[in-house]
Length: 197
Image (cartoon, rainbow, N blue to C red; front, side, top):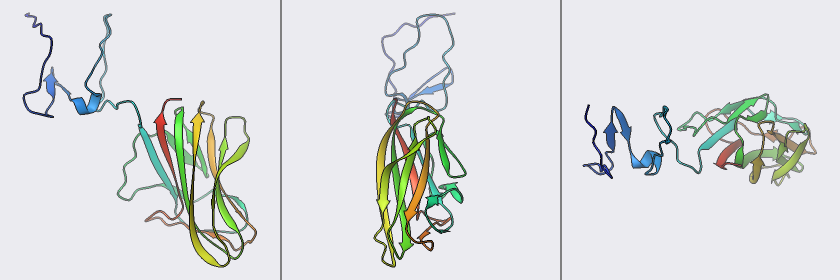
């Protein structure tokens, strides 16, 4: 068996990459560098090696209207499925509780469409792992028998996978409606994983 020793291997066609023993290596996938450990071992490669930085983005939406008094929005959630592709799969939802499978610093964006004769808002509640949910952001509507939209955001350092998030609608009228739809986002929440904790 022969050994080839070189300082660099360059692709012959820009952005085409270099194939080594059936493995395609491209700058756009790995940021230009692969470091191989000095000790003997196996380096496993997935189809895409995601560079550092944003590597998680998921959106969930309310699929049907919720009408009633104040309370958590516990049903009719789905992950967006219209012209959408998630980046990673760090967030899961069950009965309106959003759970994290990976720690990290997350930007949480909330939007809500509402109708009420009185005041109304949708709040983002975060449980940092101790079982207590605390409001971290509020999307406030104008009330007064108007349809209205609002948005909010918060930046959360998720230091353990025990963190949870729920949305809470606060209002003073039992006929308040928070709008949902299965085809497009009326009330929705997005999680963007910015970096490691």
